[in-house]
Length: 452
Ligand SMILES: Cc1cc2nc3c(=O)[nH]c(=O)nc-3n(C[C@H](O)[C@H](O)[C@H](O)COP(=O)(O)OP(=O)(O)OC[C@H]3O[C@@H](n4cnc5c(N)ncnc54)[C@H](O)[C@@H]3O)c2cc1C
Image 1 (tube, rainbow, N blue to C red):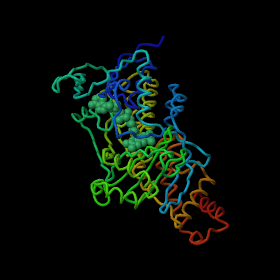
Image 2: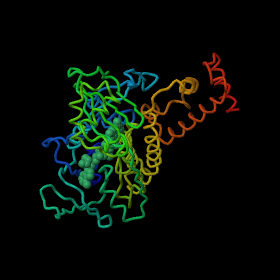
Image 3: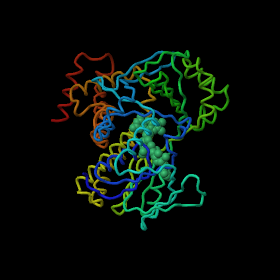
């Protein structure tokens, strides 16, 4: 029989909260898990927010650790790369990894429901749906919930000994730390996104490869779409919030038709259904949030988006949150369940990595929205050569992030080194014109000269 290590209150039964709960339960903790949502088993889904998320190496490691990887994989669609829709209907296929590595895509709400149902089955876990956290009294150890159906002003106070705040980017748990010396930084992106579901091929429209992420990079705007198992694609249209074109300026059906015909003419057969979704779905802004500390008094800690909200372009918010959950459980184990030491170690390990990932995620929007151009060829070929010659130092950033679990901060440093090396190599005039036949020798010599 596993030991009873006491009761933990977890607020937020989202992706990371559910995984954290399962991890804590496996360590012998009892968990009271609260979420403002109604029980997903008995309630309708929220429309217009059906985002797809991608599970990559870090996420799989965490899921394997709790024995759920195979079941989750069965719900996912594997992707081997991107299909870039260039102007005038041309397409360019790019692999995610040199070895044919895959990432796995799933509707976020499906994964939510799966993980929270699994958390509810763990011995010692009690789920409390429809409990919206309104207030936290840290010193007195009280969580104040508004329970669905009760009066606005009626708060149910629940005492806690130890608590985890996993209640997403706009965390009410985080709010408690503002009473203390707390650094908080919130950076809104100029771009927002709207969900647009692309019908299946059977409904007319272009053939889209279900094994690839579809992307239409268009400078100020971007459309990306992930395949679903039913043949449809869940798309996200990224558009500036203001200016031209923007969610503000594209307001009528006629404006929207011009936008589609100009930027995504291949999608014109679906104009009717796309317009009704564009009209009805909310434009969701995106934010990067950094804060510190993440923990208080050896008894209260933030994880997932509550600790570090990221823009979604690298597809790592959830993967990073899953790593948080795994790291928290490991730290508790390594520190003999002394929460003070474990939380300090957890934050020391995770915060620099979340900070690095925030920078990398912001920068990746440019990469996703970059239309390959002949003038990039030398840069790209040099990147490939470096990766071949010394993969341990020059593996491309996306591969480091998606297919390894080296710390994000280390991936950021390696990426800086890679970019700097390529720029230095480009100073050699022989890379200006046609590709030199001795390119590999030149690169090897340059690397050796640097080392020497
Ligand atoms: C468009 C888009 C695409 C993305 N793609 C990817 C991807 O491909 N891969 C990836 O790894 N990540 C991706 N992400 C990021 C990922 O969705 C988040 O990082 C992840 O959902 C964070 O999980 P979380 O559990 O910390 O927060 P959430 O999933 O937001 O869960 C928070 C939970 O807390 C509950 N809650 C909130 N407030 C309260 C309250 N006051 N009281 C009680 N409960 C509360 C909510 O109901 C919710 O259940 C994407 C995000 C977006 C927006």
